[in-house]
Image (tube, rainbow, N blue to C red; front, side, top):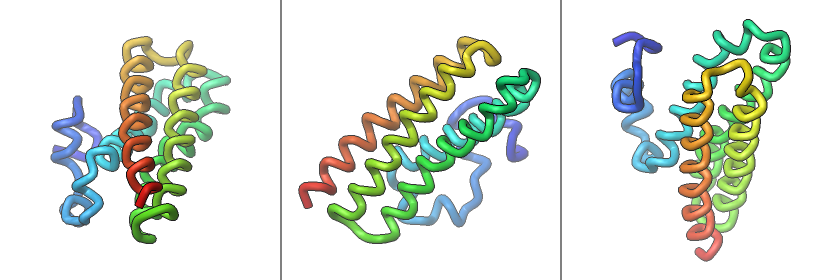
Length: 138
């Protein structure tokens, strides 16, 4: 299966390289889902680039969606506790921003896709909030 021929989360999981799957960070479902959200945003670029406003907003969506997993990665690499919680809070902010950019781009994308991405971002926010609160208390 090629890198972007997947139709859902389960198929997408099969396309990832082993080096990512072997990393201890892979055990965190929120990390896997944040990578998926970032890939969905990348694929949505094709639809957004058709709209003049979509083109201007695309970089914001790509930046914020990629920032979620990037902050989980960076925080995880620095250890656990309050410092990790700080990176998770930044990831939460990026997930909220991603959700907002999807809403703002709803006129250029199919509503079903927008709702899916916004629900995924909301799920990620909930998961990150739990982990961040646990880390803050360490």
